[in-house]
Image (cartoon, rainbow, N blue to C red; front, side, top):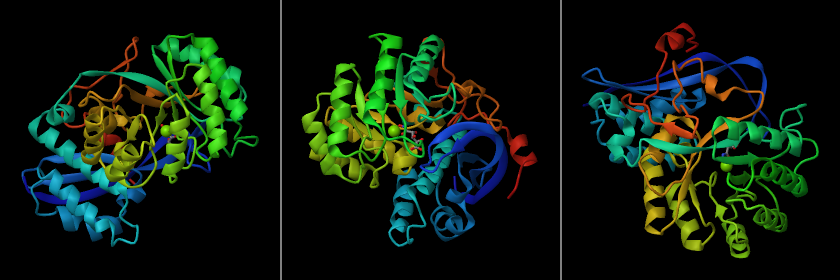
Length: 382
Ligand SMILES: O=C(O)[C@H](O)[C@@H](O)[C@@H](O)C(=O)NO
Ligand SMILES: [Mg+2]
């Protein structure tokens, strides 16, 4: 049970996903990027793994913080290890991030599952073995036939419904798209999707994240006429009072915060302030599975749903272990990318979806990621 080793491996993998200046993904030519895998090993040879960008697990961070907290400890003490690592953040000069807490916490959960030969969601306490997914589109673009016009969104929505999705979330246009942001164009895309899919498919929006209060209000009022289920991150989430102002004015539920700092503590403040109607958490956003569960359980105590941000196994297992989350966010999707092709370092999808829109939890131990260790070793860069 005692942790003896924490290692990071960096490897090449190929993708057609490219990040823009705001960190949003768009399709492009295949290129090589680097990915990291963190491995935590115990004295009896058990291992737990989790993936993250290499900078999240860089040598300085592992040496100065992670190994100091983990080595020699009982790997089953996830709560104490998470608290001990989180307490290093304050004095780390912002070098120890929530993303690092998340990759360590996920590897510990994976280690527990692999050691006990159980899926993580069953260790947490399973609520369901399959979860309804919504298709989460990439942000709009200026790619001919991509997501460049409202009609493009409408056509893509039809394809997503044919694939089985019962819900669709539009990420609309944001800089660096030359003419964006534009509330009226956002609403045209939403209207085109509603027209294309009809009244029974659930629709949501995740818009430009820095609109003014009045722009966000105009967007929200328009969405109410289109029967959307929620408006997400239309303003800078550092201004909780702006969200309180917006939520007080709108009938459509305001969902958040996704990117606001402060883990489950800040999300408790949003609930107390009435700044959202549906809460949001995400394993990468709050520092791991452990704090994501704290957020979801707190929301449940207030009678609130809490939607989990992001795809991948770590978020899927959290969604499968709670009642007060309606969807798994499957994406990000684009007409020019085949999401079901997965990643070249995984032998199978972590979130396979059936024709009815349900993602089934794999019966593999831990986080259930079907890792191709040969690919990792054959493409090692560090
Ligand atoms: O980079 C981002 O901001 C995320 O990918 C984001 O676009 C998307 O995951 C999201 O906001 N989902 O709700
Ligand atoms: Mg979002």
